[in-house]
Length: 202
Image 1: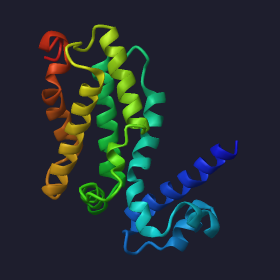
Image 2 (image 1 turned 120 degrees about the vertical axis):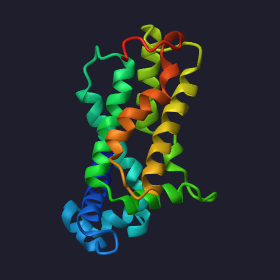
Image 3 (image 1 turned 30 degrees about the vertical axis):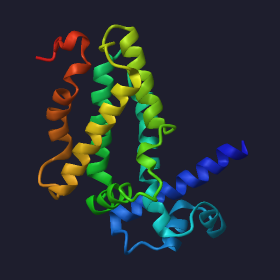
Image 4 (image 1 turned 135 degrees about the vertical axis):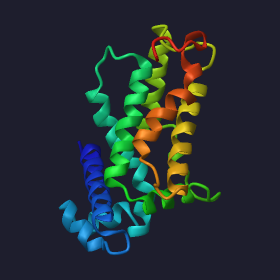
């Protein structure tokens, strides 16, 4: 119970911080505002975070909470590829509507620092566990190719998502992220289908 309460407290701080970052900007958001908005305490905040800058690396936590919600929303009998595309569509919609491009770009840039923690590559994340499960079940059901390992397919999917996010930031958001990903991701993942067939994609 104590562990669950700790996760809830940390999660409330993270969610409040990113809401405020989006609404009023990172620079104009104070630790005190985050504490107040999250209904937590100063002691709780500094128990989990050294300061506001430490919250930049928690965007992956926000994403993982979204994946937990999406996991509940997915129909169990939805084909594996549809599940993968659904996850991408919903996550990218959330990013467009609630994460500033500046902070997303900051997160992506920090992941390139060799001595920093690469949170996006942490394979213990809910993101990777969910992808492994969907792809493994898809292979068992004959919906996805079995010529590649589950881990390899997970790596390809994650790589494609990062590439789409990076390009969107690089281009300054000059195109709708979700719409562009909906067109490109099925092409990127075309060899996930059995025998490289497009099945009913047309």
